[in-house]
Amino acid sequence: MTIVDKVESSDPAACQNQPGCSEAVSTGDMDAGSAGWSAVSSLSDVSNHTLSLGPVPGAVYSNSAVPDKSEPSPPKDQALGDGIAPPQKILFPSEKICLKWQQTHRVGAGLQNLGNTCFANAALQCLTYTPPLANYMLSHEHSKTCHAEGFCMMCTMQAHITQALNNPGDVIKPMFVINEMQRIARHFRFGNQEDAHEFLQYTVDAMQKACLNGSNK
Image (cartoon, rainbow, N blue to C red; front, side, top):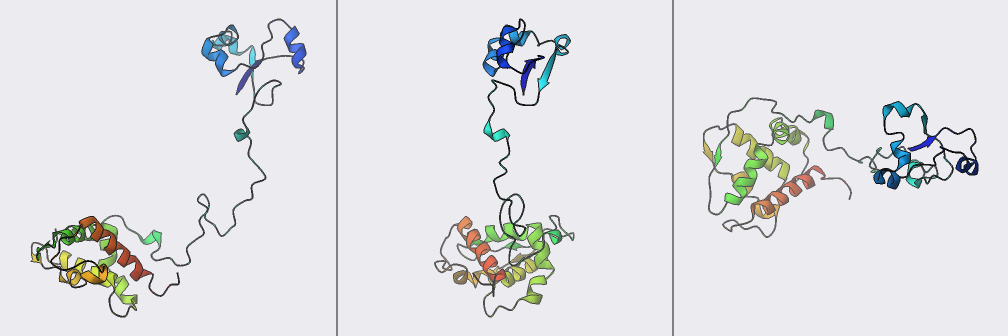
């Protein structure tokens, strides 16, 4: 916003010839504490000046302040703001996601170490106590509509989370997951010490593939 004096003429040459007439104040003038800026620094002097919202002769304007009308508007089938097309398949509607526990549960079962399986136990406990995921698994909504033939990571996790939360205070063997170790990732071997974060990544990826089963690439 440029601060200028009231002038009767819009001719910049005429403004220069009039006493007391100041041109557009630049940022450098304000930083340097020039007389032109100090003259309007107090509230009592503001009434003698105007705030120009339009083009001022001699002022420099940034191109970014003026919207470019030449840019085409995004297609109607794209989400506003991110330019990403809507998904072809919705795995779970966002309005049904509940971030809090839908039921009150006691602390579920502990997981027994079956021999270098602590990495899997740690990741499974993190997933078990993620409320939105646990709510969905406990509803058994996936298994009601699952048509997977053979291994399904979502069904495997549903069985594990249900068993863990339905046996508070006990210690269980996470055999639902351990028995499918090589299907989660080919290089995983029962008895070998693996990385917990890597196991978590492969588990979530396998769950996503199970949800997308039957969909094209």
